[in-house]
Image (cartoon, rainbow, N blue to C red; front, side, top):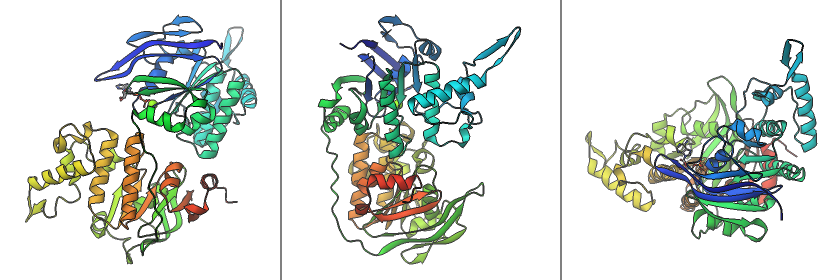
Length: 508
Ligand SMILES: Nc1ncnc2c1ncn2[C@@H]1O[C@H](COP(=O)(O)OP(=O)(O)O)[C@@H](O)[C@H]1O
Ligand SMILES: [Mg+2]
C-alpha cells in the first residue's frame, strides 16, 4: 500500500511520421526505483521528457501526488520537485561546479537596495548534499577538468540542490566504467533510502536486476507491461523488450591462432593539436584471433585503429602487415593490400548519406572489375552486388539498392558497412565501436558476423567501449589508458573487474 507519486494516463505523443508514445498508462510509487526498459527508439526519453515538462503530450493526463498537472517547461517540473539527468549532460564547461549548479536559480543575498549572488552559501549547501549522499565533488572545480563520472555527479547534485524528490536518470551508465556504474547504483540506493523516487532509463538488464523494484518495458512506443524485477528473469525481459524470442548466446569455439597478420611496434601518434595520443604502443594480431582494445573513451584506442588504417600519420614506430611495413602507404594502398575498416562514425566516415545503398556498397571497389571495365562503369554489376549483399546480410531498406542511405535505420546502415568491408575478403578487419547505438537484435547479428570472420581465419582488431562486448568477443584483450597499452592478456586470464581496473589506470 505504498503511495503513488506519479501517474501517467493514456499518454500519446506523435512526432512527424511516428507515434513515439502510444497510449501509455503507468504509475510510479513513492520511494521506489522504477526502471524504464526498451530498445533504441522505443520512446523512453520522450515519455520522461514529457514528465519533465520538455514536451507536451498530444493526449493523456499527468498526475503528480494525486493532482493533475500541466507541465509547459522544465521549470514547472522543478517546481513539482522533479529532476532529470539527461543522456547528454547540460553543463557549462568553463564554469565551476557551484556556478553550474546554481545556474538559472541563483541564490541572491540582499542588503538594503543591493543584491548579489551568494556563491559561498551555495557552495556550503552543495558540500553538505555531497556528504549526505556520498557524491564526492569539490564545488570549486571547473567542469572541463572533470571526468565524465564526476560531471554526472554534478548533474545529480543539481537536482538535489533544487530539492528534487523524483529523480529521472536517462541512460546514466552508458558513459561509465564498471566500477563507476557500481558506485552510481550505490548512490541510487542511497537516494532511495533517503526517500527519493527514482526513474532509471536503461537498456542494461543487469543494472535493472541489481537495483530496480519494478520495470516498465516499452516497444515501438507502446507499453508492453510493468514487471516485478525480483520475479522476472533477464532473458524474459530481453524477449519482451524486442518482442520475440532471441538467442543471445554466442557460439564461440576455441581454436589455435595462425600467423601474425598485424604487428604494430612502438607506435607513437600525435594529433592535430600536437598532443601525443598514442604512446609507444605495440600489439600483434594473428589469423583467427580477435584482439580487443578496451578502454574508456578518449584513451587513444581510436587513434591506434586510425593509424593502422592510414587515416592518421605516425611519428614513430612501425606497422607491419603480413611482414611488410605499411606505415607509409596511402589509405587506398592499405585497402588493396587487405585491410578492412569499419569506422566509429558510420554516418561521417563509413557511408555517403546522400548516395543510394547500392553505390555505398560499391564505394571501395567501383574502379575494379566487374564494376568498371576499361574505365567504363557497369551499373548492372552494382545492381547485382547490391541484391546479393542485401539478401545475404539481411539489410532492410525500403527500396532495395535504390534506397537513399540517409533514410535507413542505424542498424541497417551498419550492416551495409559490414557487408561491404567483409566482402573485400581482407586478411585484417578493424572494427571500431561496431554496435554503438544499435538495438539488441542488430547487435547480436553483428557479433555473429565478427565471430564468423574470426572463424574463417581473419585477424580482427576490435575497439570497443562496451566491456561486455569485449569480454564476449575477444580472444585477447589490450587495455588502453592515456595513449598506452597498460595490459595485454588472454581473455581467459582476465576478469571483467580486472579489465575495469586497468581502464582506470590501476595497475595492481
Ligand atoms: N524531437 C523529435 N522529433 C522527431 N522525432 C523524435 C523526436 N524525439 C524522438 N523522436 C522519435 O521518437 C521515437 C522515440 O524516441 P526516444 O523517446 O528518444 O526513444 P528512446 O529514448 O527509447 O531511445 C524515435 O523514433 C525517435 O526518432
Ligand atoms: Mg533515449
